[in-house]
Amino acid sequence: MLQTAIAIYGGYFGAGIGILTLAVLSLYGMTNINGMNAVKTVIAGTLNAIAAAIFVFSGLIHWRECALMAVAGIAGGYLGAWGAQRVNPRVIRGCVIVIGCAMTIWFFRRLF
Image (cartoon, rainbow, N blue to C red; front, side, top):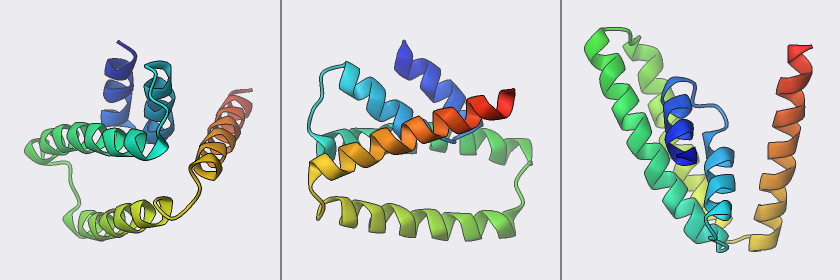
């Protein structure tokens, strides 16, 4: 149920779904950060593909900007995975926690 809620949110907004997915996967008992990142990537790719199909068929896409974002997203995905495999998993886990906490504080602070 938690992952379904994240998928619905992620298909529309996209921001922070990686952190949320990693948090849910850890609640499910996963501990290997590289394995968690692999599952997260498949989940995020699937929900983004579904959301993209909806946007394509609704005619809401600005194709020039889309192409630039696609190239940057693919490059970032490959470079991020390459870098994550070369860093100590504890460092990655610590970064995920710090970024998740910082984002939470930032977004809640903006509400008030």
